[in-house]
Image 1 (cartoon, rainbow, N blue to C red):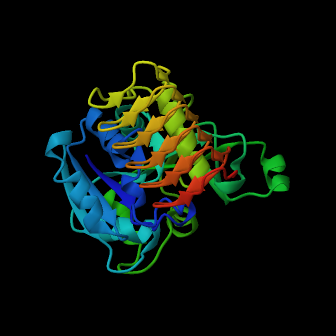
Image 2: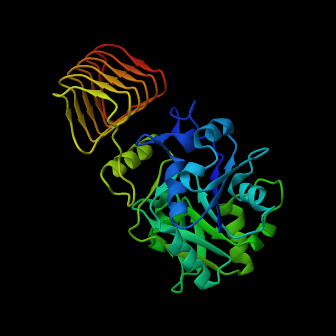
Length: 346
C-alpha cells in the first residue's frame, strides 16, 4: 500500500517559524519533521510515499531527497493551485488508482500503521479515519461512531453546547486509509475538503466508513508554536514510542556546564562554563555563553545566547541573538534572525 502525506499548507498558524522554513521540514528534536511520519510508514512496510506539496516545494525536496536513506521511495507532487485536502488527494492519487494511507502533514504520532491497515481490511471499508481523544476538541472536528465503529457523523470545530449534547471527545486525527473508488467523489482540479465535502458525501451515499480509535497511542498536532514546542518536549520525555532524542558528540561543551539527560544537543554547538540546560533542544551551531539558562525550550540553528541570559518555555528561530542578561519568558516565539537587546525582558 502506498502513502500520501498532505504537506502543501503554508504553515500560517506556525508563523513566524515557517516564514523561511516550510512546515514539513521544521526541526523536531533536530530532525526534519516529516521524517517522523515517513519512519512510522516505513515500519509498517510502506515502501512508497507521495508528498503533496505547494509551499516552497524545492526546499522540502532538497532536505528529504529521494528517500533511499529512509528505506522508502519518495515521490513529489506539487499542486498547480491550492486544492484543499480532498482535492490534493485526487490530484496526487488519480493516476495510480490504488489504496492509500493518507496523513495530514502536521501531526506527530506513533500510531501503528500496520494495525490500522489490518482494521481497514477486516472491516471491508472504503474509508477508515483515525480517531484521537483530546480534552478540548473545539479546534478540531468531532467524529461520532456507532458500536461497530461505523462513522455516524462529523461536527467541525464544535461549540461547547454541542459537545455537551454529544458527550464525545474523539476527533479526526488526520490519518486515513482510502480506497481508489472514492476518487470519483472528488471533481478533478477543484478545491475540496475531506472534512466538509468528501466525508459527508461518503456518509450520504452509505459507503462503508469506519473509525479507528488510536487509544493511548501518541498524537499531537504541531500546527501552532506552542503545540510544536509541546511535541518537541514530549519527544525528549520519551512519550513518543519508537523515537529517541539524539545528542551529538561533535560539540564543544564545557565540563562544568550542567546539561540534563532530557536535553538534545546538535553538532557544532559551543556551550560555555556555567551554562544550565534543562529539557531543551539545542540546534546545530548554537553558541551559548557563560552562566546562561535554557529551560523547556527549542533553539534553532546558529542562534547565540549571550552571557547570563535566560530562556524559558520558548521557541527561538534560526540565527537569533538573545542579549546579555536578557530574559525570554514562557510562551515567546522568535522568528529567524530576531535580536533581543541586552537586559530586555519578554
